[in-house]
Structures are given as C-alpha cells and as structure tokens.
Image (cartoon, rainbow, N blue to C red; front, top):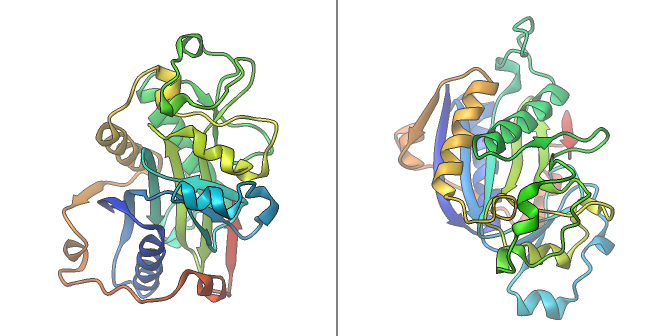
Length: 278
C-alpha cells in the first residue's frame, strides 16, 4: 500500500527536509511507502550532474522573478519547479516491491525509473495527450506533431516558442536511491508558466523544447484532476493500493519532526549505496 499526502504549495527547502525525514523513517521501517504530491514556489534546482553554466539567467534576473536556486542530491542536471507544476516525491523501499513480471522481490533502479515514466505516460493519456519515451533520455515527451499546437494562444503558460516538428518535454524525472529507498521523483508541467524555462537550459538539453499539458490542450487543466490521475496510475503501475491521508500526522499517528538540515548539506547525506538518475 502507498500512503498519499497532498501538501499544496510548499517551498523547496521544506520539501527537501521532509523527504530526508521520511527517508530515514522508511529505512527504519517506521512508516510504509509514501507518495508526496505538491507544488513548489519558483525554484531552479541543480542535481548531482548539474553544470552551473546551464543556469543562464543573471542573479538580477532571478531576483526580479523571485526564483531561488538550490543544489540537491537527485540525479540529473538543471530544472525548474513552480506554480502549476505537479511534483511527486515517492518515498518507496524498492526492496519490498516486485518487478512487473512478479518474479523478483526487489525492483531495480532502471525498472523504477521506467515505472515513473509509465505513470506519466498514462496520466497524460488520461487527458488525451499522447506521450512517449525517447531513447537515451529520461522523462516523458510529446509526439513531434500535434493538431492542438496550431491553436495555441499567447497566454503566460504559452509564452515560449514551441516548434511543431519536435518532441517537447512535458515531464522531468530525477531520483535518488539510498539503501533501496527512493527520494525526489517527477515533475509534470500542468499549467506551468513555461517562460521560466528560458532562465535555464532544461536538463542540459538544447535541442528539444519544454511544454505543458495546458499548452498541448489549449486550456488550463485541473491540478486536482491531475493529482488524482497520478495517484491512480502509481497504483496501477506499481500494483499497489493507494490510501489518501489528510495530513502528515495521519502517517504515524503523531507529529512528524523535520530536521533542520540546510540544503547545502544534503550532498553529504546517504553516501552509501547511492544511485542517482535523471
């Protein structure tokens, strides 16, 4: 069973501290698998493989747009989180999960990431958006052409040029696995203001643009409907029941303390048996 917590809008530093605490509890088997669903205040994050040069905005530009910058211990390069983007942080113990064929007790890192991609593909399909994997890249991408793109307007959510003949990235994945327990996860652009991606080279990829569900559909999409779809598809893909909880206290029956670790220290945490993927 996966416990689902929908947290609304929280700042990135709080999200990092919460993940750290829940990972520790999961390793100690004091809690089961947890899926956090949330939105972040505007922030640029740099993964383990990030190149600082991929943040192309100046400090002045970032300050003017109220965008923070954080290093973190997920795999991958540079990405953006902000309002209108659904972020999912699965805190799963892969040693207690079975592979898709049911023949193994431990879900491997590659299978886990492919599972996250499948969750995203199924979620986009629930809203009539066809998506795909691209060989050699991690994440989920739209088809090269879409009749809906010809009807896109110039709303803030669509304030970035999107060629009609290219795949466009609608969701990013970056994970950290320590002693079998996962953290970080996926970010699905729902109603995201895509102009923020002009501040960076997303995931270090210059050849393919970024899109959102709203851009593909030509209308805003209900964040709650997308959250419900993501939760449902996690249950389908990982073959587990989903239990929605009202708050963090419901997870353990007592308040969950969050250690006050500053983000810069996160790279020093969980050094043994780490896996990073993006």
